[in-house]
Image (cartoon, rainbow, N blue to C red):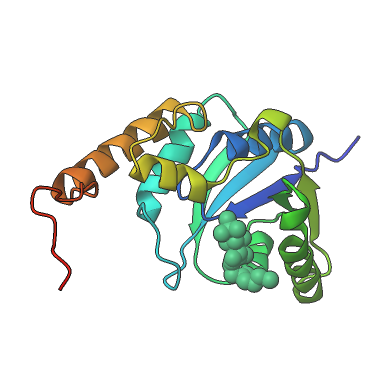
Length: 184
Ligand code: PNS
């Protein structure tokens, strides 16, 4: 009788917030693994826009159609979290050459820490390969349209978030030309 082995992968990240690029990688991972744990890093040293609970809620909402997905958080070593979850693989998205150095270093270090766990790089679709949470936040903060880049619940959350901030601190100022300063 064949022994059923559940193939588990962990897809870690900050997901501040989850973008269409992340979602693309999650969908690809679900075609390869029985169980995909999207693990939201809780990093006190890294200032985040959204609290961990909110990031997890958004990921849960936008992956509701993917039965293999579980959403979790972790605050220690990634490889320890993966071991405890029974995962054989860490998934990372690789968008461009610029990602490579950082990702390569992290993969090698994680291999030293846990040789039994592999890192698997997945490339996102062409349409999402230029996306990053950082750029999405910047565009949202400046009042730009982010709906092509993130799932609708994320766009709504960010728009609400930055609309409040903009009301509190107007950032556009015009030069006062009414009284030109006279040079002495
Ligand atoms: O989305 P990000 O910010 O690129 O994700 C980076 C993350 C969370 C995967 C990385 O910082 C991480 O693994 N943090 C957990 C702590 C850890 O294990 N550090 C050693 C990595 S070699």
